[in-house]
Image: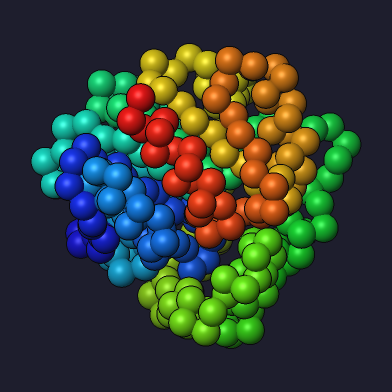
Length: 267
């Protein structure tokens, strides 16, 4: 299959992985790649299968998308890389580093809720509930450009970043074949989770690869409280909270990512 990717710079390779929301693509990292390239890294961001300009595969499972990451590395002859995973991509990045640590130099997680401990009795939060209602409706009807704007506003603290060009680009990645893939993913039955397994957030301290986590203080689903709990339970984790930042961490916290992650990758 064909995978679309962006590339900039030379040096040690860093792969940026986007999340799983409708409209997600490598383009979410356009403002992040240039400073990393200027700092001496070969930066790559690719559209996962079923997203952006990449092909829609027959298998739209999370396992297939996870396997596409080392597949992409093999296609480009990359033996070892650092990974920056946003949202749903953070979990697969951690899983791969646990399985084959020799292939990954560093793991950076941006706003991945599945890597945070749950909080009992807190609910999902107003922002998360509103987004889920909108995405459930869009699972039946292709989103309008106003729908795309509402989703971006729900996930961005800095609404001024939603320029006409950014909105048009995000919307173009939310319709057509990408909408068809979103519908197929949304309607696929969930596989039951194995009982008694260790939650992935508890395995973060087992990583043999340096790990750096960044969460937005204003993110949905009680992310701030959950990240605070994670930090208290595992104080050895390199965990950071960015104020005035919601779920689209690569946009809201672009400066913090440069200031914090580049030195981390250079250690």
